[in-house]
Image (spheres, helix red, strand yellow):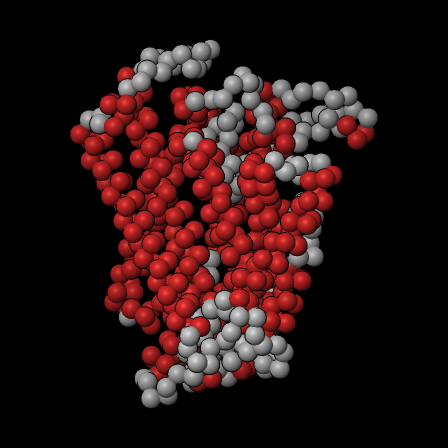
Length: 476
């Protein structure tokens, strides 16, 4: 039979639930294997070729597997074939990762509003501080991934990493927050595109109808598979559309007056007026003037729709379907016909919920702040030090255990929680540091969520503000 992802995901040669020591053991073997293969690839293809285009797994891919659709004889997947296919499926070049980061983040378009609220000095300081902490969190995640991931027990998601450190409850927390984040992100995309369409239509089209247009165009793709090569091409194209839009926005800002239609007092200084002119939408290119460059940038960004629909639409629904519906509610997998039908229905429901979010609360910045505080902030800042705290404690506790025996993986553990909680002086200081960082991040997230909710309530009570499911555009 053809080697399927479902077979890989459920593969466990020993038939038992692996423990923390098992993950560490196979991850160490995997890193040693990769180090040896890396040296071989550098000799064969060259260092810069591997850096730019990623390492190939052609020699690892299983070949000559009979296909059940062609009358082949079904057989089980061997350990060697499993490890080869798992490695091939999970390989991604830095270029692919760069595409996802630069096209999925909307920061450049809302940065002017952020600086208008705090000023240049505090704004730069905040950006640098959060950049340092994000880099720290990234290093923690990278370290834990390298210590716990292997072809035999691959890490495929944030929830997998959470499960190996704290168990199933924390995995469910991560999966639920990630699912909420994806739904709200689609709502924000519908809201931002609806604002742009209403401006291009010169506000002659009802704003709720503008949102419906984008909802319908996004929910019409119910396929369970996507062409990854085509997706990479669209993502690459999306980067340059973003760059062109930002350049045009900066050019318009430097040479034209602000768009006073946002309703801000014209007595303010031009600089402050420019920062605040995007306030109704908080998206920089929607606040520029005259209308020609504004319309042009919105047309460019509308061409990003196929990429966004694929990323947060089709792929996002797959994440929710597998992590929530399959894992928590025992829904059929996507590999069977009933799963494909349920997936198609899930896409329609997914986009409908996103439309409700974008139209019920037409406040781009406040909704962005709320989803960032409740969901995104946790994955970037709160969870990494919290998980690393548990990782270090478990790794330290192994010092009191017997030597690991691969033939008896559950026979070496000794309950030494005192060693795990205390350890040496270096571990005590580092654990305390991560504990304090976790508490600080939780406090920051709570305050940010509270502020976003208060802002939403305040704007709804402000006269002249857009209403839920109304025809007036937030940028009108």
